Image 1 (cartoon, rainbow, N blue to C red):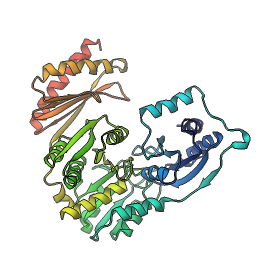
Image 2 (image 1 turned 90 degrees about the vertical axis):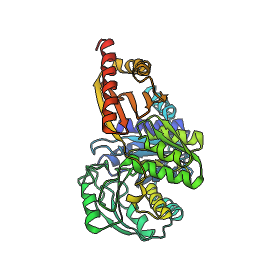
Image 3 (image 1 turned 30 degrees about the horizontal axis):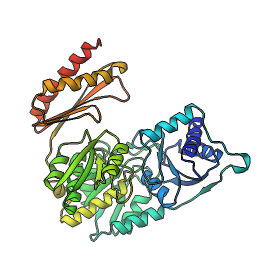
Image 4 (image 1 turned 60 degrees about the vertical axis):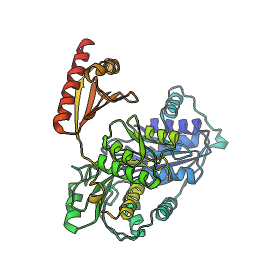
Length: 437
């Protein structure tokens, strides 16, 4: 990601959206200011005005794009990835990230140099604005809490470093913040909050006897939780438990998740009168399905939850507020909240396959899986091939970045998962061999 490319992205976004007003924000990464200036330069060159929000979480940029009536929002971030990476995520005027069609149009404008260039008298202007209080006020209004929760908050030196502790303090919580200084090198832990990177947070929650630990990724669109015992809360199980809570409140409704999420999402949602729709992996696709089907809630098992009543961007801070409200509503601790959600066994394996062959291999496997698993209950081809089985499921996908075919298997028991994986791997290896690998 170079300044030259970033400037072209700014030009392309303003050209495609016919923008008069574009919001630009960034996370704490070292390369952020450099790329921000480049994006702004492109926006101005197209004759649009750029309003710079500075360091804010991605969901704040998305929310303010609608609230401030901008034509587009540009977030400079690499989300949960290591500090040497950076990138750009683009949002429309209704808080949703650009999907495949919008991204393809932006790429086409860049590749063919179809930029809208403003006359020298019509070059846009730039201003620095601080409107994150609008986002904070909306959360505080929607997320009023009746209990004084003791929280340990870990922003991981990322974009939520100031806003998350301030919001929870305003909601009446007792907040202990760690790793809350902005640092684009992410010196305290990985920018991705997972069981390994949150060991210190887990230990502090246990040591201080806190009610819950909350951690965010680099740009704040993901959240991970530590329960009151100091244990990392499984992403799938907390997603399923919250989905069930949302559906139970309404008595029915649709929940959207991706093809890799655990079958416990169906188990919990359907038990409360809801229905689950599955999409391709990626929060953009989850948001599109939520919009298309007027779903109540959607999320991926990485802590990216979307609340359409608020906006269409995954939002770590809002998700953690809404989870606390759910705990209060049900009168449970976090451990108790997920207690009824079953825990299944998941296994993942990769099989080498040349890039030029992997898509055809997966297509062929889709036909062969019917023979390998003749008693399957259902099949989905929205992202690779996913077969629902009596005691689990198997997903076969072509890697988007490597010469690999990826297999994900979930079973009601470890033995069952291994049996499904053994049959799946044998089929993939056989198919790859047929294609001359």
